[in-house]
Image (cartoon, rainbow, N blue to C red; front, side, top):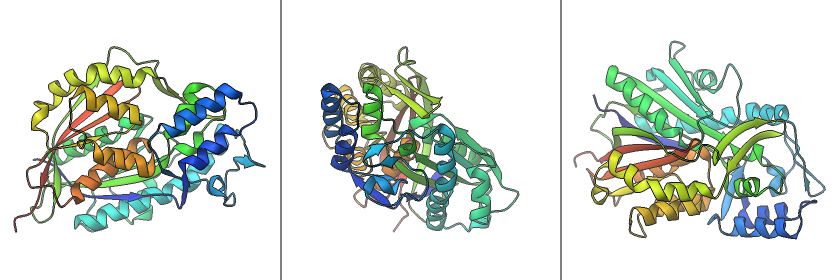
Amino acid sequence: MTASILSIGTALPRTRVTQSALRDLFAAQPGFDRLSRRLVGAAFDAAAIDTRHTVLPQLAGGSADGLAVLSDGELTMPPTGARNDEYRRTAPALFAEAAATALDGSGYAHDAVTHVVTVSCTGMFAPGPDYLLVRHLDLSPAVERYHLGFIGCAAAIPALRLAARIVAADPAAVVLVAAAELCSLHWQTSSHPDQIVAASVFADGAAAAAVAAPSGERPGLELDGFATFVTDEGEKDMSWTVGDSGFEMTLTPEVPRIIGREIAAIAADVLGEVAEVDAWAVHPGGRSILDRVEAALNLDASALAPSREVLRAHGNMSSATLLFILRDLLADGARADGDRIAALAFGPGLTVEAARLVLRRPAA
């Protein structure tokens, strides 16, 4: 039985901050020498991001509702426990908002959900987000729950793959996939280039998908196939570890170069003939990653427009980002029944996750 994404819901924190304001804030931090300030300016300005959302209202001039990260214009470095407490305080509402929107658009009542798959790499607690969704959305207490943690930016595709396999095994299953990431909780004030690059692109957001057997009554994205590929290089170039002052991202300039070198062979292997793809959903880990994918696959300049637009408006929301792009493709009235969509995402390792989807429109 082929599974289909019937609806996608998204949620964003109320605080939106401009890229230029964040650039100026980071560049003004004490201890940053002239070279570090130049690197901040270059990284933030080259990111092709206009605005990002954060659960930290003080970064946009608001009051500190929870975690205090700003004092007299100086960014503080709270311990990991305090950052995780803020995740526990603020992430559940975003999970619930995105998931409720996805369910409401799917045609299924909340009590029809049989499985919940949650995704996150920016915080952890138990009972976790999967448990709280059962409570917050009044799901059946017998719902099966799975949580995929610390997979990074690529995690939405493994979550959809798990949902597709559940539906294949049980055609009556209704699977709720929900991802929420609060990357801003782990921004570092370090002048190390990796931390500056991470601070220039990552943001907060949540997205969810309702996955079930296609009904034929509403538009959907059929989940046609999946693949995973671990590159020969990159284990030390993209990583995500727990430090004493937050989770620490390593994101070296080699990441887009590795992707650029290897993505053509990977795409041909897992997606088939690239020329037959009608639309692309490529995780925008950064503008340079999109540029490398576009060049390596010889794509038209408009092919990655949906990915670039999500990056421009929201930044890199880690695992939730790909679902934002798929949401926009599903809602695009210019897309026709049968359009073939290729999804690509990149995670620590360096791991490439790929999915083939087919857009379905109900008969008129």
